[in-house]
Length: 164
Image (tube, rainbow, N blue to C red; front, top):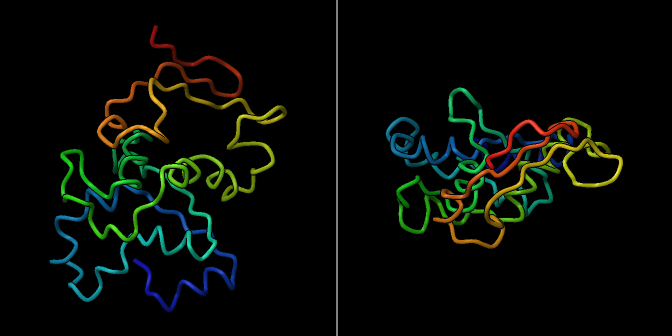
């Protein structure tokens, strides 16, 4: 929850916002009751932060949330639960583009941990941490994101999971 007046402080003091997209979608049913309608616009201001030039480190907050990065990606792009509620997304003006959601979970996360020259990209000389998916989540439909399968995961250059 960030007040509009405080966003400039993130820029001024080089504060890196860290936000878990699924928090927004799992918390949305009770937010207005607990926070009041006058504060709802302070929740998960992803688009606002990105438009100001800030990099958001995305995460899952596992074990509070499920820890599935595809769920985080879906929540960032749609601001909906897994049933597609609410139609159009909760506070849709704060949705992010799929490539921005991917950056939240990769390059911007690496930036937040001061490892942007070693992690977060598929590049020679970088840690070989990557996941192979069944679909291109940057171009597929939101429904497909939730049904995307993990084909293979490599951590530090070592195969740690293979579906087939």
